[in-house]
Image 1: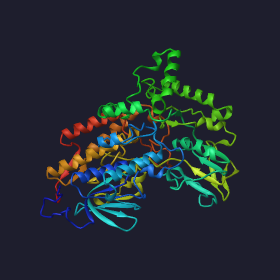
Image 2: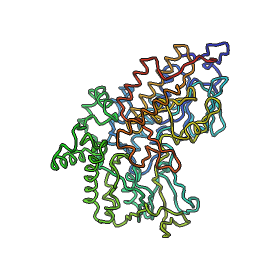
Image 3: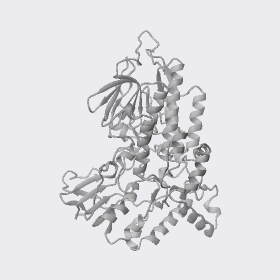
Image 4: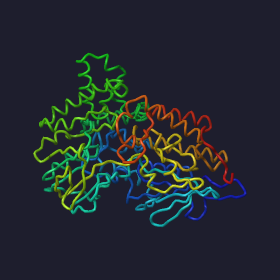
Length: 551
């Protein structure tokens, strides 16, 4: 059992104190928060967790829209910390649907007795660092305040729904929903006139299901997106047995992939320019057949060279034109941007849905939605009437959940002020001026450009090792060094500039949220990131500043 007691005359003992004081507070009970709380407890830390939902699961708790599923294969989008869990759990599909992933999260929470570490239905409003006691006070919307030496924000990268600022949202008499905050009881749109606003990933997944129920579905599209058929289906039991026979090696191979998944599919190292037209089409066709993200592995330079990228983009456009029967609708659905600089979508029957008689596509790129009325919405002065309007407008990604809280560090500095020009972190784990405050998969880490469960496990392990090491060394306070932070920000930017990622307005840059600083937030390359963090650990955690409590 650790005993995080100050080593100065002004000691502030934590363990054994009143229940309002803990070694660590974990905010969020998604896959990151669950494992973080479980791991800290196993190392002897006292832990208190808070979760705004009524149960575990994070993004899989809130995103219950029809068709919601993961775009990373089930055998990879799962915990690795327990081989017993890996061997026992049985997935039913290649790409798991939301209900199955949520059931998995609930199973993990019960199996490892994690539920008791969290207080549910409780939102954290803010956290304040005290310059004298060097403790954090975490405040909840219920009026509770708890103290902790460490605060770990496991608030998720895609957990704050981005509701557009459109006049009249409170006027509409029908049902109004966001895909990121779907009703737990579900939504029956049978026989209703339905609008879906947006054509990002959640829209692409939900539109085929909504169209199959609704009397009529009207999709309002600002920007078309590239989507590759997921090629989903029942999981191959023979392949599952092979993986489980040597799961450790399977995990190792995937961790060596740029995004920490997809090792079983070819990621070719040659250039599109070295292929004949026939070879190029054959390669694209093969990778189209693999499904989803695997398409971009057809040639090595698709994400680096705009001319190489143009071949892949045109191939996908040709598939859209061949699928959608109405020529005008097909052209509206064809993106003219770089493929892959926005998150590539994986679908099941998305483009085919526009061949249905009860589906209409409305282009709002030139004429955005003007307002909502009691009966519908107005575009280009025309009123469209609906019984239900669904906003599939994404999230305030990476920083939204953190900045929604009032977090004050040393000297009363707010995180919102610190990040006024964009997020600045050291390793995506800490930000200078906020001692003992950690982020899981924060800006500056691979996060959304890697297998998220692999990422949160790696972060939790690293944070726990860092806390344990610093305690053994006699330290109770950890800060990010400002110079190290600035260097890391430059590294993240440099890596992104070597690719095509910054070349379009994506949520990776915060471009979907009006007024948000345009900064490319994820770190590109999971293996390189892990290697760098290991080097930092071996160098006694260079870039961090350590202190004993009281100085």
